[in-house]
Length: 469
View (cartoon, rainbow, N blue to C red):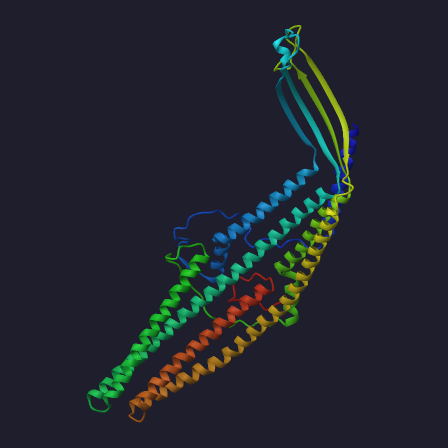
């Protein structure tokens, strides 16, 4: 009864301390974006009936099937099991042992001994309970719990990073697809110009030089089209890889580079980032983990108390039962407590405590540095959004002007008042203006994706309005 009372008091006090400690925590780890359990499987390149994915569908598929996220989830689940294992150290331990010993003793003069007396058998059962270990058990459990929460936040961060990667390559794919269309249109215009120039040359209205210039421009346009198609296919392969598909999967992605206004202020973005960013949560947990490491180092200052109860049976037969007059059997029980205290260890505990204390200070500095970095990231991403937004309006005007200039140059050439160089130059500028508009729209949406991730916000669809607060 004394053992159970002491053990019960010890466990109650430790759990009470742990409960109070975690009840004081104001924030819980951000939940994973994908709530299901990922399963490692081989991909055969098929994923749905239509084979066409929008941006939100691509993001959600990557969150489910990307192997890197599966590895991060396994790490999170591993540390959660480690927390449960650390919790088990608060309870009592039950153990049993069985020994078989043969003893030989030489006597002079020799005596005749019953062979059964040479063997000794022992079977024991022991229950032990750690009553106090200098707060080491509590600190170890709290550290394991903090690490489990930190890894959950790390999984959330990895999912946000994966969202940004998928959106970035998705937008790059749409950008390159638009560039391919633009290069094809440019090639078609240049081939028409070559046909017109050849017809004028055939009737003697244009020199051979104009035909040669038109042919050179057609060859250059074909070369640019090949490069654009190669960039598109490269983006497609990378996008497939992020989604857990093979690089040769016959996947199709659909979407438009639209302009969605972003109206959040810098203060709103900073507020969201400081509230939602998982890396800031991880940094805070790193400080707490370092503090628990220091508490473990300080446990050497305190005594350690263990209580135990054991029952041991011994005899000279293997089954520990009496068989005949010469068999022996005895039962012994014991209850007690053991206290140990290392009073002096040449400063080992003291310097280990100071070492852990400096690591706590280091983690605090790193947390503050991260907060400053977050402020810079938010402002730089917001500036990138504003810059790309301004570029869109400028590029749209440029496309209108370049289109009108091309039509004017083509009409003047057909009326024999303009030169072939004017038409080719106008066509080249129109292609460049279209590429500039496509790049501005893609850069805007990419910057939008990056600022959402920098704010810790999960926005799988960038093509819909998200400027409400």
